[in-house]
Image 1 (tube, rainbow, N blue to C red):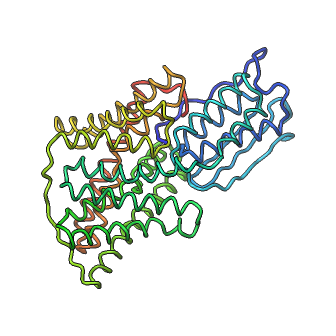
Image 2 (image 1 turned 30 degrees about the vertical axis):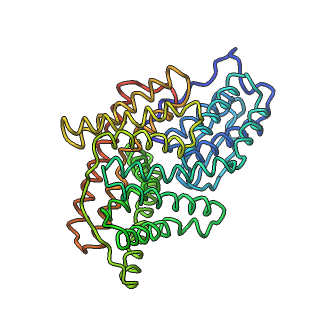
Length: 430
């Protein structure tokens, strides 16, 4: 998850305080901390927040822990401060797949950890509850995820005020990509090439529609249809980790995000070449005729789509939607009043401070506000557009302009997140 530097770990329990580890063995406490760490990693938590949360949980359980996290694994060293140095040292190395945002499970993992640390439930019960979170999604939840892809793509096209055919085409491609993503979850080989295949699907369908039905804003439709796969959040998290001095994790996440953009661009380039060989000539137009009310409806649909895609609990949909809409509106009006980078900065500032304030007030993860609040600000679409222009036009200048735009957006985002944390300090790591 995003994002700014995590607060200092909690102090170790003082003598005479109620200890959450009473009655639990050393190995059992370590196993619980490992389970918490694995779940937080799986739900997309950034390195600085994950490590801060793990240290806090370990200290409350009477353990000393030195965690090291990166996007594909963790190293955690444990010791018992009540024993002589070196007697109880234990190190665990865990290989993990890159995490994905799951707000419901993140909140549940946070609640379980808090219950164990407060002594409301035992470690064994907490461990069992964490394991229960690993159950596979229901058919209804999987269908909603596919629908979320289509709604998000159509909503982004609506926010850009594209013609109705463009919006419908983006939504259709989004649904097809959602089906592809669902299929790839159980097929590792398909998952490796999924981004490139998604680019091929987006390009072929958009070109076919523009050739057989009516002209489209071609590149814009392709980018809108791929919006959920774009690694803008990963780019933001990567720079955030680098500014927090988590250099290895930030560098790895940055490289992964660039690789995703590259695979998407390769897929679209293959689609354009296949269409050329098949004799399909894309009809391109530049038109944005929609009135403002279409943008308003698209904002509501997009906010709902991201609540679905982030797997929020139903009772939190209103909060996620409000946060996403607020981030977009602050950015839009801030950009009109000042400039684009200033609008992004203000939106990130409001979102970060709002997330910390919510975490203080509700005693729940601020990620419920922070993550959806910046999702429509992230620069993934700019990066893909620049790379597509570079490939199609063979113009280094077009790619350079896009790179500068991405850099400006990233700097504004990270600055907003950092200063938002200064405005309202965080009491929680998540």
